[in-house]
Image (cartoon, rainbow, N blue to C red; front, side, top):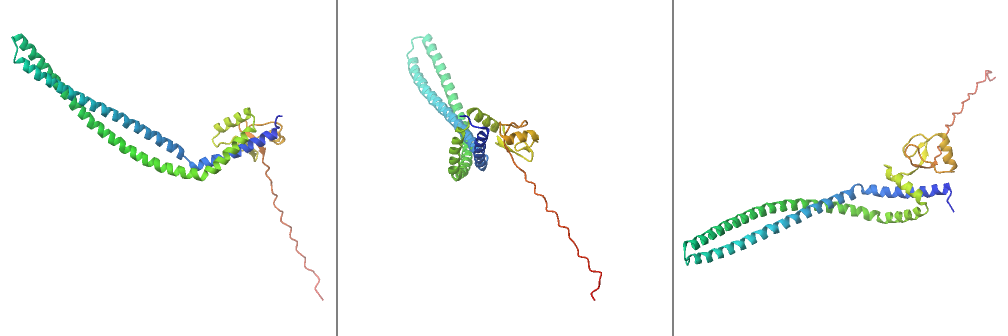
Length: 263
């Protein structure tokens, strides 16, 4: 059995009240959740950067070790060739060995140059790591403070929020899907989170634009759901503004004195 318009409005009003209470709890938190998230993302970025620097350091150290090992191999080869050079049989063999010795000497120079370059790069990378770690430590302190503040607020509102969320979940089940989707869409597009509003003093309770008398009469009858033509919010009811008439001052009457003198 389909709910009546009055029942639909009651369900929407209840849901709006619950959402408004949840919004108030979120206001207490302010921008803390976003600030905590931003700091966590920033810290993750610094950690990734330091990890990248560490990998680069490892590569430089591996390069140094590799070039040192190559130099040892070159020196062994040079020693072996020098021994061979003492026993050559002709000038051609001597020249060939001599040429190979020159090449190995150049290889050693190249390896030594690469070692020096890697050491310079390591020093620069160490400085980058220290600077990044220093900033990371500061951001971590900021995060710890923000998280402690947020956790304190959450602990104070956790029970109430959980209770409201359960009530909201129950309230949503009493609203048809199409209407619930419309309600959520209106709330998302609203700056104050109000999707269901009353008419106050002849105006929309959301955007404060005037509502024609005929439409106000239709809202009171609750024959159909009516939305504001300006902001799209759903009208819940028309609040009655009681006009208290000022009490008219009583006319003061003065007694006329008798013209006759008492005898």
